Amino acid sequence: MKYDRIDSSLFIHNRKQFTTQLQPNSLAIFNSNDIFSTSADSTLPFVQHRDIFYLSGVDQEESILLLFPDSSNENMREILFLKETSKTIAIWEGEKLTKKAAFETSGIKTVFWLDQFERILGQLMVEATQVYLNVNIHTRANTEMETREDRFIKWFKNKFPAHQYNQSAPILHSIRAIKHPIELELMQKACNITEKGVRRILPFIKPGVMEYNIEAELMHEFLNSRSKGFAYTPIVASGKNACVLHYIENNKVCNDGDVILMDFGAEYANYCSDLTRSVPVSGKFTERQKAVYNAVLHVKNEATKLLVPGVNLHEYHKEVGLIMQDQLVQLGLIDQTDIKNQEASWPAYKKYFMHGTSHFIGLDTHDVGHWHEPIKENMVFTVEPGIYIPEENLGIRLEDDVVVQKQGVPFNLMKNIPIEAEEIEELMNK
Image: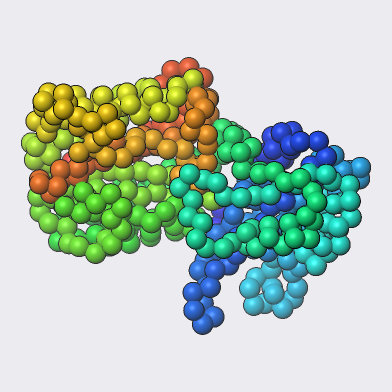
């Protein structure tokens, strides 16, 4: 881990939030992610499953968290099972968590080695009547690959077929969406690292620079700031590439007269930031580019004001669409005839702004949360409108991460990152 140890009070709080919503006499189990192989003896860097991290702070493979709040044995209400460390492992891989370190990380007193799991589980299952298993039901989940959790669930249900089973995800989607003050501090750190990246690249960008050169400068800054790197695959899209919403090749030259759309964010302690800025390669916007830029900025500012407790996200996106519609009319991209003839399912503005404005963000870039429920204080959202005009080789998107407040405008975690067109130009020309 590159990051400082997180105060265990966060994970103690998170477990309490989770267990108080379980049915009586229930046991819940969470697994670490696999280390994924590529070929030969090569593997991808380990990325912890967000749910076991959220509930324990354990950032290590081959770990299991078991929660049984109604156990008759007080010592068996919270249990961590970890891969046993050894001198050989310490030499070849680095020392894993000791039982003492696991307690300091998680606040969980009962820690066993993984080889004791089946024996202890069998004892506890005699007492439990219901089990909560952790299935990925994110609306955008890619479930083609079988995970360690998937394999575990098949094994578990075969071994204990008579118990009643429930899903942990609905509870986690509710509690993970509302951020604890410690989580907000960690997200602010991620955003601060992202700010360093922005300020590094603005004077670096000039005609002839490759998109991947910009990506490399960002990675340099992120690693030097104790981040593992990008929170998600970065987009560095110059000119017409900016009209491809998920362009990630980042292999073209940045030409004079183009605008570069850059969508990236640093992670810190597994927490994500998500930023988009669009800047002129030459260091100065044309009059048309600035008009489109300011239209997007206007929509972003107005959309941010709408993110207040009680708002329904579906209605929020419809209202932002109307704000964008007005800006597109002013830019001459659509007219009243287009609006009159539009289909309800695909409004006229969607020709130039075809994606949503906001999504949950936290431990995942597209974090979990209930889209059908009104938003609440301390939920964190992106705000990211864009206008994409392929015929002009111009795509502009602007994005910040904001925290919903009890009253008033959301707090912008990226408030110190340059966004006004004039400030962008000034920093690029220093």
